[in-house]
Structures are given as structure tokens and as C-alpha cells.
Length: 253
Image (spheres, rainbow, N blue to C red):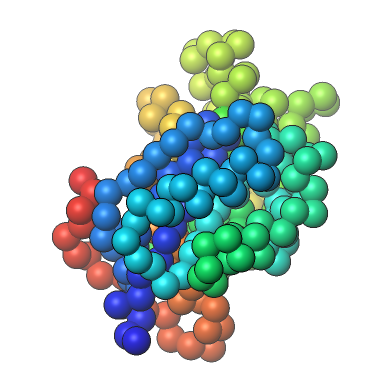
């Protein structure tokens, strides 16, 4: 089967919503999104059950790609700051999705999935996501650098990035003060990572109405799930030539 004809069930697991769609091998949408509220309580079992139900709404797919809001190593969840570390620690979500859905699955951090979608493959590119929490990904020449859980790194004496600019902080301190905090965060990231380009995504990215550097862009949050196609392509290894993304008409506007 040609790679472009592969159908991928792409799943974006978030602290507020779970989204799913079908992609072809180049990341083009083949069907509309399905979206459901994140289960409460957020146990692994309730998540897998909901994903199974959502998957049943799609007629067919060959592979599965999922982004999860936490540190994921070889498909195994190590931390889940917004969902409860204790109940998720060492949960093999990749193995479980493969078992329940009957197709090969790959699971990585959700910001890493965004990164694979947004990166252009030129130099050092960084992605941050501003939603329920703070996500990050670093990509070098189109390939992911092993995940850094930036959300848990201290930005002040007693606050990490999640605490400092996550959704709860925005609600507590208001938009004006939150935007001042984001200016500080962007200055820190620029100094520490010296990226060639920074992409900002997530539901709260649209609040950044101040002037950004020329190498910083706000991106559509809906595009992040498309990284599922790139993730599967890269399973062939960096020695293989990457399939160039084509500008094709998509179902999702």
C-alpha cells in the first residue's frame, strides 16, 4: 500500500477535550473532527473507553497516532501533570490502544505531535502550546529532539511553566497580567534555545496581541493533529528521505 493511501486515526488527547480524525499518509484530513470532553475522573480506563467509542465512528483506518499531555517514553506515560500523575504513571497507552483498537499505535507527547505538524524542517524549530497547561517541543531539521517536559521546569522561585502561564493562572490573574508573564516566557525561551523559529499554538495563543519577533508565529491549534502522519513516516528513520508536505485542499477549513 502506498504511504499516501494509508489511513491514520489521529487522536489529540487534551486536558479539556479529546479530538480525533482520519488523515492520509501526507497529513491531509479525510474526515471531519470528532470531539468529546475529557473524561472525569481522568482515569486511563475511562480515556481508552472513550477513544474506543470515538474510533468506532470512523469507517476504517490502518494505523493510530496519539498525542498525550505528559511525558511519554516509548509509548508509556511517565507523567500526566493535568490528569493525575499517580493513576497514569507507567501506563502503556500505546500498547493498550493497539490492543483495544486492533491496529498498530504510536503515542507521543501532545506538543511533540504539534511540533511534527508545524515544523518546516529548517534548523532548530520550537513549538509551545498554550492551553490547559504549557506544552513544548523542539525539532531539528524536521526530526524531534527527545522530549523535554518544560512545563515542569521552574520559571520563578515557586512556579513552573504550568503554574505560571497555564489556564488556571490565566483565570486567576487575568489577561493583562498573563500577557506580561508570556512576554517574560518568550524572552527566556529565545535566550535559552536560540531557535530559528518559534511556533505558538493552543487555545490561548490568540490572546498574544502584542508585537512578536519576526521568527515567531501564531498557529492554528487545529493543525497539530496532522503530526500523526509525520510521526508514522519517521518510523522509517532519518536516513530515509522525508515525504514533502504538499499544499492540497483539505476538508477542514
